Every structure is written in structure tokens, then in C-alpha cells.
Image (cartoon, rainbow, N blue to C red; front, side, top):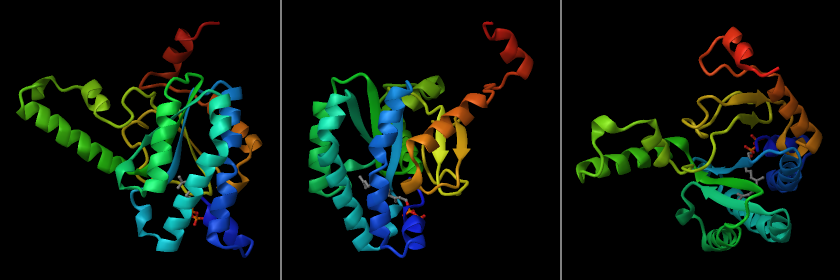
Length: 232
Ligand code: FPP
């Protein structure tokens, strides 16, 4: 959800106003996902590196997060959204952590759509923890190092049980992944848009989906193989 700060600066508004307007976009996009048959959406809400921002911005973001959840809880349940968090939630303040944990428990039964919030998340940190846990299991004799495969690694990531992203959308004209789902994105299509997140409307999201629809996903195969295996 990049570009909130620049959106605000262009309008001579405080950065937090950009984040607030960005937060208003979240459930438009969630609605759009559900209506268009997308099964899961991950929002990069706060990276493990975002703690480096001024303390007022960090606190403001957390308060905004608490408000977004409270304001949309009924909608979340009405639309049968299962909420999940990836990242180190334990390091978050109680006023963010506790309502989130409650919403995760209360929405666990929903199956229509999964909304994953990446909060205090960093892919390198996630991979480091996975490697430590695998190494500990190997030392304890629970797993043989020579038998470790991709599935074992994937099962030790915080996204275990969740689908890999098919599409990653990066808003605001930046062309990088910024420590987001680095292993899970191995075969993801990436759409870059110059639009800042507060302007990322349902129409913009639909445009990104349609761009995704035009991509040929080869997964290592040739164009001819892909077209041969397609049913007419
Ligand atoms: C990046 O824009 C955006 C963020 C760091 C925060 C996005 C989060 C929300 C909109 C919702 C808040 C919810 C929670 C749970 C924290 P930027 O500030 O990097 O924009 P810029 O690059 O234009 O400065």
C-alpha cells in the first residue's frame, strides 16, 4: 500500500492523512476481490523495517490500524472474511495485537475469502526463523537434513497453508519487492502502477487484474507447451 506519504505531500497534507485515506481503500479492494473470485489477499501494512520511521508516524499508523479493524469488523463477518496476520504480532502494542487476535479467532470459521495482513513482517526475518526451526528439528532427529524439500521449507514459513501469490501489485511507481514474500513470490506476476495507494480504486484494481489475465505464465515451460496443454 505504497504512496500514502507522497499522495499527502502533493496535497500539502500531513503524512498520516495520506495513510488514513489509504486505509479507506482497503475494504473497497477486499470487496472487489470477493466479487471477482480472488480467494486471498495479502496487504503489506507495516514492514519490520517501518519501525525506523518517526515515532509519531508509527504510533499514528497503529492507531489507524486499530480504527480500521473496529470500523470494518461487521463488514468482515458479513462478507465471511477469514482474517490472518503474518509477521511478528507479539511485538505490536496491546491495543493493536489484542483486537486483531480476537478477530482472527472469531473469523477462523469463514471460508469465502482470506485477508492476510502483513504486520511487522519481513521475508528475510521469516526465512531466518524457518531455517532456525528446521535446524532445531534436524538436531532433535525429527527430520533428516538430506530429506528436506521445498514443502518442508514452505511449511515452516508463516504462510504455511496459504496459497502463493499469483499477482503482486506494487503501487506508487516503485519497482521493488521490499522484503515482501520473497520465497512465496517465486512465480508471482508483478504489476507496477504509478497510482498512489489512496487513489487505488476498484477500477485500478480491476485494471491490474486484467493486466494479470494477459500474462502467459510458463512455470519454466515453453510458450508452445503452455498452449498445447490449454483446453480449447
Ligand atoms: C506506505 O506508504 C504505507 C505504509 C507504511 C502503511 C500502510 C498502512 C495502512 C494504509 C493501514 C494502517 C494499518 C495498520 C495495521 C498499520 P508510504 O508512507 O511509504 O508512502 P510514501 O512512499 O509516498 O512516503
